[in-house]
Image 1 (tube, rainbow, N blue to C red):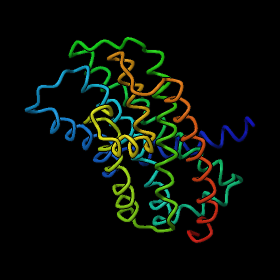
Image 2: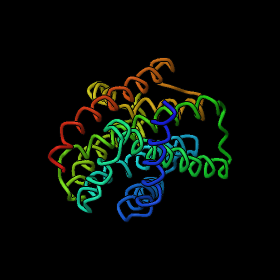
Image 3: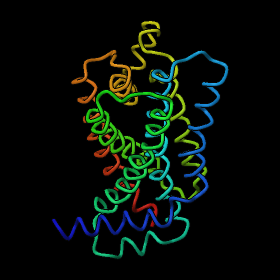
Length: 245
């Protein structure tokens, strides 16, 4: 077990050193949620208690899903995947290392919107609950991001296009810009299918003290989403690996 953990950390450290400053990671992980937030904020009479939970959700979601989708196509393109698989590691070890890199990226940058909220006088009433939600949510979103790269291609643009087709709709249906209680019945039904909805609900509870769903349901869905996305990512990558080599 210790040896496998060391191998996983080696993959994670490699991803951090190589991919964190890549263009798609910086644009879609940091700049895009910032500008999207500013576009929604400017000219609207909204309280910081409503805006900051949405900013936290966007930051964790975009940063956690910005690294993991691009690792596999880049390594396929640079022909480094064969060298990694020639080492005594399993596919699951490699996948967990990639997920951990995105997970750490998402958790680390979640500090930024929290600091912005504190600068605006927003108080985090339940920091422990918010911290646990960030950890679980970042892992779930990182696993989701890795599922985008299961298509055996060496073109990063193809993977980012697929990721955008999934990520952008989730942002607009997950209660970030419009509260869930303000949505029509069909909108609530659609929002209930997104794991980001439940993370946003926890973030609003931690800051504003209000939640649409029970907290136990929010955490249960996040945990189940993390397990489901991780399982599917492992199975899909195991099948696609032969086509990449």
